[in-house]
Image 1 (cartoon, rainbow, N blue to C red):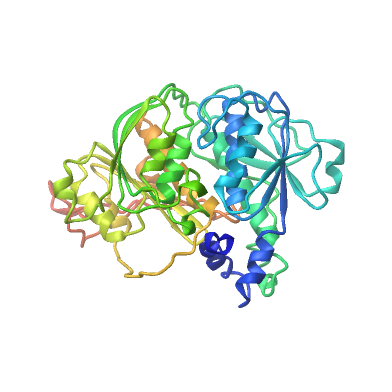
Image 2 (cartoon, rainbow, N blue to C red):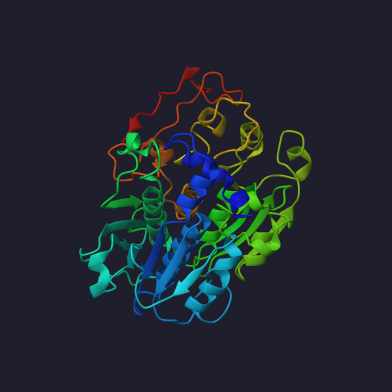
Length: 443
């Protein structure tokens, strides 16, 4: 079952290695151990528990074992899919359900050779000199990894978006460590190099969001990107929303490598049901087991004023855009790259952003931390739109190359060029009869 659960991750690993048997890749993905170190002060906050739970989940979904050096404090807020009253106990109990063979083990020090991640301002233990190690830090909207001996400031708020952003930056380091010594990997030394420090900004730290009231939001697909979107959204203190989730599929074992709300014991359940099972009290979920396309959308009823699109089917994105009455955001991934874009009145639409259907009907290579980036960026964009600080036209789309977020061109923001061929007329200014000026690409 582990091989089936990692099947899409194995495909992705082949981007950087010579042809080898799956057994070789499976062994490599299980070799690295990761240790998360946190003191009481750092995990008695919602962001602290959010970053630990998310990092552990991402690592387990990549086939790794996780060690936990931390006290067992009260579980705070909503940390789906964790259940219970004590945080570390809930994490260790849930880990085997996240992935076949998955585990999170409490310990007092990291095992030999483990990669170590120190959380926030936690003091680095004396035994850390024997390990490759990083420190995870965050602010309201930004997440970082830095050298473990570098001091960082404490964040005393409950808003977890920045903390959640630190987790996928760190998770990529474990994958690269697993791959570096495989046949052919030496040719990709630059892509697989260790990142010493990297930061991802998802918003302005001056933007404050308290108990966000989202109202109706339609979610197109309940797949990996929407699961990540919900995983992050449900952690917001006081969040309220009415989510209508449209997807006809059920959870199967090949989804477990990237579904942070999926659980091994619930294979065969509708994908939409995992949002219902884990929604916090203020979030109401309506499940529609249907495919959102040009045939079904007219009979599903009007779309909400805010729409989140996580489907990888490009014609479905086109159909949703044609029916969307207001703001719409699309999350997408391709190998190690995640992208999110938003579309509304006066800017290029999702069809301009994704103008071609490649017609590919095959198993798509995927991995947990890339899908998580797409979902997390969608949450950040939705919250910024809610607070009136939506991204400007020059940042209509944002990409993240998840392996080397320290790279000069790893985090491009850019405007989407309205297409002259767009059936929705995006390329024409109907008042003037002229073409819109194309926004500039910006790094």
